[in-house]
Image 1 (spheres, rainbow, N blue to C red):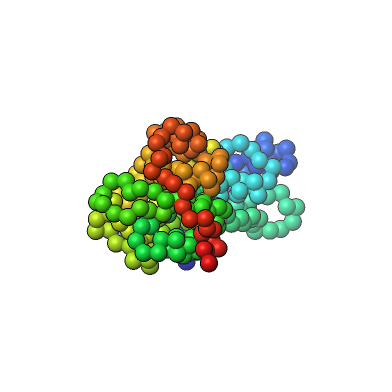
Image 2 (tube, rainbow, N blue to C red):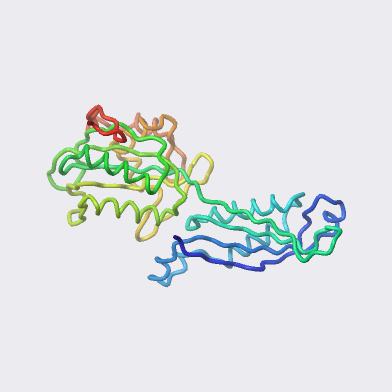
Length: 294
């Protein structure tokens, strides 16, 4: 269960309604917003960057109330919910729009519309392993991801030569695409939990590992909904993904239309692959990682 930030009673004058005088004269609308956010990082850091700036959210709500006239407060509530969910840390939101001056024609105290929206963001996760039974490890990791994302595709594994680090065995790599309601930081924490469950340690930079799970991209660059961030714990999109054949080749096999934001530009993964040396990336075992090799 996520924590909550609640803003109640945000009020402003708007011109929403189906009647002519509502559009002409306007009336006061009152909005309550409940945001579901993982507040543990902010509680530990005491840093505004680790939470949602509710003053900014209130400003967004007022701007939408005072903005383009709409016929229905249902539409206003939906637009507010979409604006709030555009903030990367918000995993779900409930918006209540009150219209206390609505022309009901009978005694009443309030009219309200309540909408609930949950984030559904497209994500790309790269998997790698070169210690132990890597096929079984990647299979188990893919199954574990069901607890974090709704899986769309899992690529066939590829065998790749190690890049950087000490001398070590070849890797098996794969890419998983899907959607999630989790915020980037919450998803990353879940990936680390899966790594630890498979004995992952981080003593040697770019060293051998039982399991590596990297969050490559969060959101869709085509629709400009991808999250671009650079914090001490997470950089999005992954800063080296565009250079890594062992990420791009299996990703392209999972999604032939895949795109990646590179230095601010949206690039087709197929074009990136065609312009790099991928001789160190070879077909891996012919198995379905969700079904397993057995």
